[in-house]
Picture 1 (cartoon, rainbow, N blue to C red):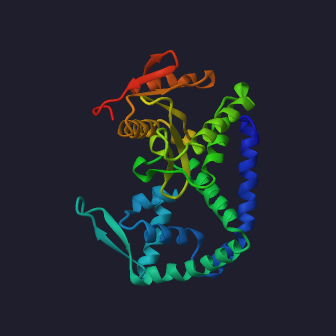
Picture 2 (cartoon, one colour):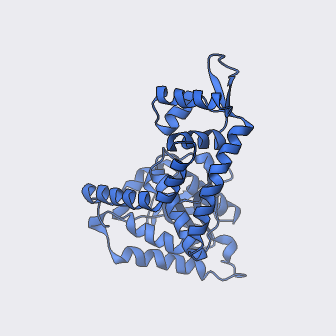
Picture 3 (tube, rainbow, N blue to C red):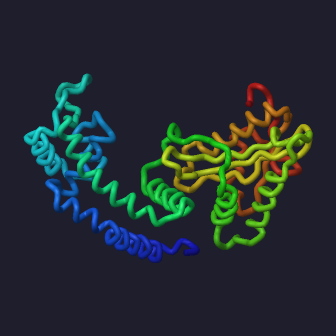
Length: 305
């Protein structure tokens, strides 16, 4: 799908929901045959994997009516699956704690669904499973609240990351300014990075690529630092996924490049962007860059880095 047609996007979401509901039908049937409703399983899951939650927190997390949730929790208490413990700050509030019986009940349901899912994944190759997991992580990220920076790490690139960078750099360009030249330039930068000779004065110790990744494996940004001269390095192909912007990740990538450049012995750092990314001017100025003949530059010092 190209462009940002809301109607086509909504139809794509509806179609995927219909497909996934049919695909997981066997699992839903298992739940119907168990002693628990789907809502009850969701509550058990939250309490299993996110312990020390209050009823209000569970209701917000799952989007459940508080009265309906209260009835579910009372049922769990009667069955010995749940106990309530007062919070330290406010005795009127209670943490919901699963008992051993509650954990065992959830494990019994989970074991069945885990086996079914594992069997379904057996038909995929390792690469297909990795693609599926990455795509599901992207869906979860895009439909979730803003990115928690504490759950994002910067890592070195792995197999497949460079192709992803080229794709994302091209897709972030406004539709009316899209051009094959964008992909060609991104591919050229990556080719130069991969061709950097080891052992030379401009070896791999003076170039780096960062991939920003959430703890569940979703890639949400990248940046490359390339050698221009003995004293000058350039930031290339900097981007952050739309759903992860305005939360400091771009600044974090720039500062990671700055620290690396300083440690590698560079004295100045530069960057540039085309008309399609003119909105980055304010960002680079806020990071200490000033306009120069070749784009934007900032000096590196122990304080800056």
